[in-house]
Length: 489
Image 1 (cartoon, rainbow, N blue to C red):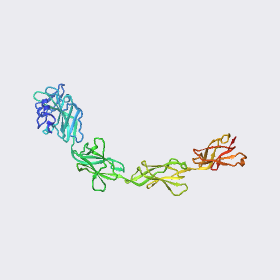
Image 2 (tube, rainbow, N blue to C red):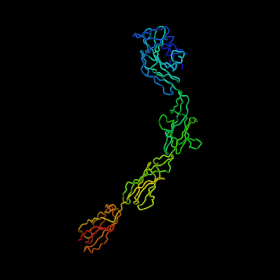
Image 3 (cartoon, rainbow, N blue to C red):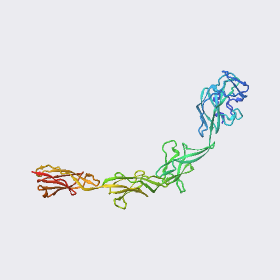
């Protein structure tokens, strides 16, 4: 690389430097060192030996900091605020003891043992540093490894010698370049379950000058399109179902797809195809595993509503068992108490992944289960509590004496004993009768039905109009309350 790309002619004139296009930016250290004394004395009387080139044999510079190493593929070294060189970083002038007024940093290709050889013209990448200042330069380098050095520039009579300070902390900058690039494609998931999506990404597989192979996602990919074909078919077609990613600086290199069957994809960039990738779609089969039926209640009254549920798993075409998807069909079956055959009660489909759930009215005692596809779940016993013939009826609360034809509201609770031995309010619709018998010897009482009705909310509620003295009682399913005497006057 020509040195005129690093130090411009204007900067050279400002520094008093003579530019030579075929040579280094600064005067040859070999020529500048001719006639230099074998002993170099600084103003602080510190003595250092030099070799026959005038270069100090022992390093006298002090260096703090580092030079940023370029990222892979970046041929520009950016030194910004990391490299600090002060006038004390290099020896003082051997002639007058002055401090240097300019300091330089340069990059020497690895393998060159001395910077003062005939190969030196290739070392034209030099950053000029004001004394006691930070480097702020971009330095272009071709592929290879470079050592970092520094120099000092002095104002002395008879010439402007350059002094080598030292290699800066043996820092090595390695530059690599891309040798070849191939188009490629990757998938976030190459195996998806039916209904799922995956993101396809256009990538570039790069082989570098040091033999390393990497993949990168370009920020901009002009002329990019996606093609797809179902496995087993020859023609490629545009994947119209693909959806570009919304947002993000890399959205141009990505596509979202939701294949319904195993599909091969590839990118095209200006009609040049990338290598392809296959996204396998796992499909559900009829293979099912059904857990035991779970009932919200295992002991209920006839006609009550319960919830029955079970966990479902489905085997997919990749032989993996997964929670069954939404929409999986299932049945609720009943084996009646004392029966020998299962009865299909209800059919439905799942609303939640992996769960069959349904609310059903109780059709009778027995064992309930859920089946789906080829899976049959274990059954759960449901006991139905049924009413017996035992009825508890309170005596009607009536006034002891009324005028003839006076309306009287009759209200009394009714309870029925169930098969579990517990008395509960009689269910709605239970029939009752209100009976009357004229007063007289109890053994000779003749009862007549004066009103009929049905129980509501466990209560009998009706209205009577006594016209003569006598007894009133309630009759339910052959069970009778105690009689209450009402006198009419």
